Length: 179
Image (cartoon, rainbow, N blue to C red; front, side):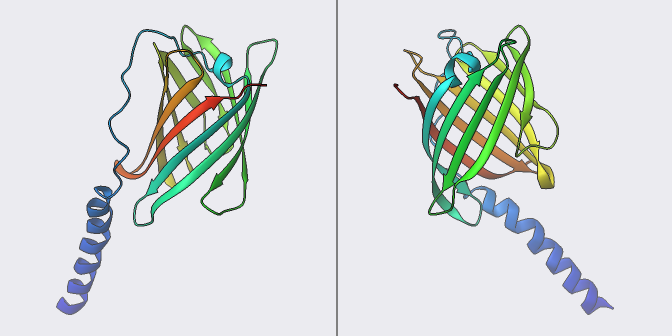
């Protein structure tokens, strides 16, 4: 009985130690850009038309992977933005993702995302747009997008947590494309 308990205890320690120890390995995204009162981040204005994002995704126990995201956004008469994206991670196949965000109050938005379970919420605070949602398997996502002066570039810092532990981070530069 003590041998079996010893094995269970060892497994439990390993199961807990791996995520806690590996959480420190998901780093290297650098300091956050500075929040500023201007320009105010309006997601409908920024994501309307074409955007292109390039970044690095760091996932615990997997290392870094390049990301490439092409987006096409459109705003309907009610002001709801629909953003269709083709996402490529590393050498993988493109994956389609769709965002829908609607304005719900001063600097507040709510919507849906194909990767999310439940609602997506977003709040603008000056040049920062903070987006929160939950993915399958209890993954909690927080994105902070910082609109840069001139309004043509946003820096995206995404953090994914499981049980409060950081399991992935994305550092991405998104640019509006000229037509």
